[in-house]
Amino acid sequence: MRIDFVSDVACPWCAVGLHGLERALQTLGDGVPVELHFQPFELNPDLGPEGREVVPYLAEKYGKTPEQVRQTQAMIRDRGAEVGFAFGERTHTWNTFDAHRLLHWAGLQGRQRELKHALLAAYHGQGRNPSAADVLLDCAVQAGLDADAARVVIEGKRYADEVRAEERRWQQLGIHSVPSIVIDGRHLIQGGQPPAVYEQALRQIAAEG
Image (cartoon, rainbow, N blue to C red; front, top):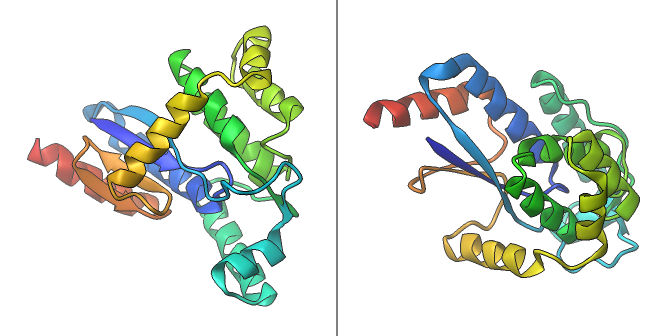
C-alpha cells in the first residue's frame, strides 16, 4: 500500500495527522505493508524570509479574530497531546519551500520520514524557523543525513524545479488543503483525523485489495 502524505511543515494539523496515521499503522502492524511518501504543499508560499507573527497572520488569512485563532490553537494542542505530539509556543510562521527541497532530497536518501519528524518538532514543538539554514541543517543531522551533503542542498537551489512540479501536480489532482492522505493513488482522507479513523479506512482499503 502506497500512502502519499501531502502536507506542509507549517501546518499544525499535519503534525496531528501524521502522528495519528502512524498510531494507526502501528495498530495494523505488518499485516498491511506500507510505503509512506511525503509530498509538498505550501500554506504560505508568498511569505518573505522575515515571516509573519502567527496570530495576526492567521486571523487576517482566515477572517477570524485573534481570540478565535488562539482557541483553535488550544484545540490543536489538545489533539496533538492525544496522539503524542507536544506543541510549544509558535510566535511566527514562515515560508517552507527550502524545507520541502530538503525533504525531497531526504526522500532520495531514504530518510524522509525522519526529517519530516525533525522539522515538525523544530517548528511546532520549539517555535524554530523551518526556513533558516541552521535549523534545516540541525534537522537534517537529527534525521541521520550527512551534514555536508545537506548543507549543499540547503545553500543552493537544488530540487526547486522538482518540488514546484510536485506541488503543481497535487494541486491539479484536486489537493487544496492539508493534510491530504492519498492511498494507492485512488483513495483520499483529508484532515488531521484520529487514529481510529485512519485505521478503519486503511483496513477497508486493504480488504478491497
